[in-house]
Length: 450
Image 1 (spheres, rainbow, N blue to C red):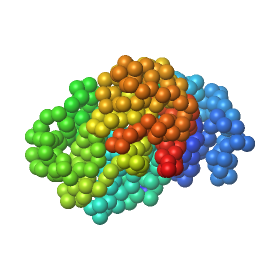
Image 2 (spheres, rainbow, N blue to C red):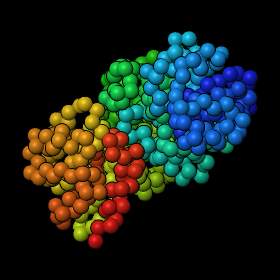
Image 3 (cartoon, rainbow, N blue to C red):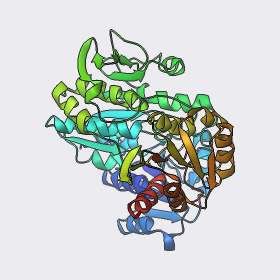
């Protein structure tokens, strides 16, 4: 950990707790800042705030009072989940105060090289693959960020000759000032989180921010198959490493249909890769690029790709039961992710889908349902999902209460050789606090089948 002096004696307001807010508050306190924490949850119900109070940190709970901005704060560090439409955050911006997220603090103090991974889909798989490849090569690596481990906590223990592979959301990237990974990755860009961002343009700009502070000594690995993305990063000063799943690239990462190449050198045969799905080829190419730049051997890359079968909740194989294969893709919180999951399978598929209603239709999902023999729908979007399945000509459509009931319905409908796929195409928040909880309930129900 670098002994960073940039926050010493500065008056800092941390808005919003949870894991990242707690970590940011404790780190700023350690770095000598005068920290005030503000969280909406009342103090009597707020264990995180009570913990910080015990550390001597000032805590204000129960609301986000705009009047706090009259107390002379020099900067704001906000939880990524708090929108910029929040009156307190809007007021801070109007006053010209910097509004940062916790990953900026991680960058300030990190001795380790930072590999940053963002994009609409594939972030967690790509982050995990890179981490596994570096580890397999005998080097020390930490997976951090949006993957579940707070980056600023990891940055305090990661050493100079080690790597931090950090999964980054658009929410986090909107709150950076100096943050500049030595290697950045943008897997892809599609419509997502438009209930948080003011527009698609703002969302794309937030993703492209991962490279805005990079120099020619840094690297940017980017999906060359997306013109919008290539335009968004056109001003980057980083050394560009494009990848393509659609065409061969002499410079960059691509495939001839049999092997994956980087700069014309064969790295791995597609036959060696066990991770299913064409969509995962993007993640694999991006991971290969980062691992090779970091100095990982091709042998270690091949070993990981021959063993790695997926991240939990991302097209995760759960169990074979009566010659029926069950897959958990609870992380599929948008249409594109579910389309990619469906494209990964040739067998007759029973699709379990539905969740939070953000106001969009699911008609475009119909075109990916050619292998779907039955749809089991649930949640706020159940009727919309049923309509999409009907458009696709799915013969059996069953509406159930929740994921547990969906497993029961799917197991009754499935036959030998079928795939049962939980891929909701929606966020979980109408019924479950996180997609992980939703996926765990699916796994538990599948494992109880007799």
